[in-house]
Image (tube, rainbow, N blue to C red; front, side, top):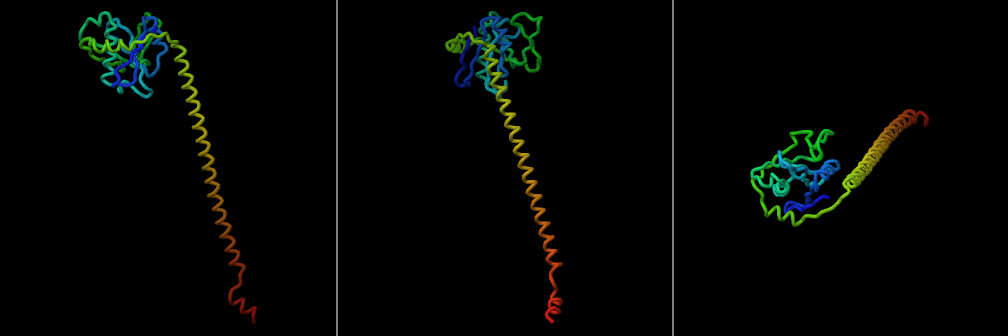
Length: 215
């Protein structure tokens, strides 16, 4: 089971989601998207909360409102963190999550600690949590199938782009050859014309020769 929440409208058309338990968290870790940003209460047990950004966006593109919604939701879904004030919430891109065979179910590390950021949450804001919970939707998605479908579509798009690139390169090559042939043909015509003028000049009689013929 995966829970989905809609963020505040002014933050954009984004959806926050999280797994029911640590086993669903494993699937979310395994079949995530490059646009997914992962949130967790630092040094405490909590839900794994994600938000999926638009293609081409990074953590730097997240507004304060979007960050606050994610941070409040992950705090509210931590037994310890929900009761405490001034907690830290860490977040990082999905592709920075590291999973090794020795880790417990739902446990993760990071490939690059420099890509991990921290946001301070002073206290729970019920207004935000209640608003998010009103948008809550439960689904049982086939995360593997969704990821494979997107991967297949991206692969097909890359192939199409490669074909277009090769076609453009071939057209450019043919055009260059055509222009080179035109320049070569013009050069040949000029050379032939110059040779013909010389031949005419050498074959024509001078005025003195014409007068001698007349006499």
